[in-house]
Image 1 (cartoon, rainbow, N blue to C red):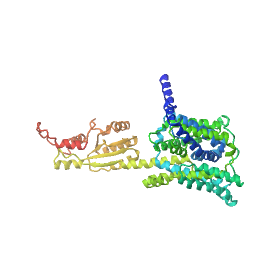
Image 2: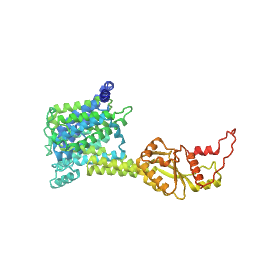
Image 3: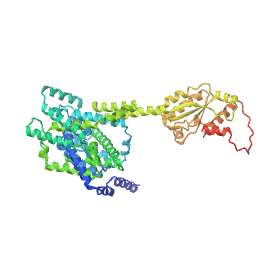
Image 4: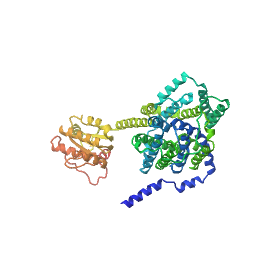
Length: 583
């Protein structure tokens, strides 16, 4: 047993590791991948710096994350095109952690989240992320865009960041400080960067105007000696790996934040990988392997002072659009950023914070896909409600609560819609072997009900009310062949309805019970109640004949004499036709 288990574990781990196919893909067109990686690095530099600053750990933390996490996720991840690093969504989660537990707690949380992601990969949890509804994702993205933009308000206004972890409160206090002592230089600088990125980006989408805007803002502020706050001194190189931040005594209190970070990393990374697949032909990511890559990246990044990382949708999109075809592009992006860390730290340290704020505000605006939001809002009222609730919860609460609220509401509305699909109604009885007079007599005492759709907890109560309202009937036949699913609640409600009818002297028979239904009914003791003299009925005509026999024995209807038939007659009887029609 232990040997087979060990083999299974080794096989599972091996399936998640890089394969020769990855190396073969890298060799196909390395020149194109190198160019794509260089382009992505240029786009990623201001974003890595900005998200590092926004997280509260500084620009150097953002660069370390982009280099270390970007390289490891590229090698071990499940997508050939994914680019990983610090993201705005993760920053939104990290700000409250920094405010409550301090900067070093972010490193511990990142390490714990990385371990959780590896465990999720080993247990094949990646496939379940596809069940997140589209309105939740759209609302989540809209809310994140709003939070990212609001987080940049203090730096864009040139005021010190007020204390607090609620973005709406912090923004309000920052605006109040600006009104008291306006810093028009910082505001103008941030506004110029936003306008340049958005306007010029429409004109030439392939040009990385974010780095152009940052360079221009830095040159202008240095030449004109403008009074704006720069990033500040950066270390020339990555720090040596260290576990000095790890406090075993704090692990318990940091478990909930780590779960939030792991959930967000999994969700955003798999969303980004799926978006990359949709933008290409023939590319398909491995969700479990992607979780492993992100887990290893988040375990390693804190050792070098980096913040938790995820797959970055914007950088991944740039990677795809510039022609990347393999993991070499994402590796090149990390290598170029490493060179910048070691060679250009003094120059990077002069970048104005207001310019980085402008870059992130423009990025937040670009995240909002107006067309997708309109389409989702017009689809159904339920979709619009889910989208709005998720977006508002993201702004007012936090990302994890927002996703949970979105999923709960989406699940409740989906169950309501499915429950409405369950139909319950009387169907005509077989007229084939009875005269009109006899059929009228039968119709007064026997009714057949067909149940279409699911019989589970969301629809069971309505079913109970409708079934127990039948009157002046001696036999009820339940046609079960079209019941798509049944849970324990549905079986219990059915049992309750049958017992109520039997107390009123009404016999209940069932036809077409499927194996899955039989298990649920038997588990609650309802199966025996649906049998007549120990018999089950495969078809509705069999159940109707049994009901007729019961009524004859009870003296309710008169027995019908057997009719002689010609054995040579090969023409189907009307009874056969009717039996086939009501199966």
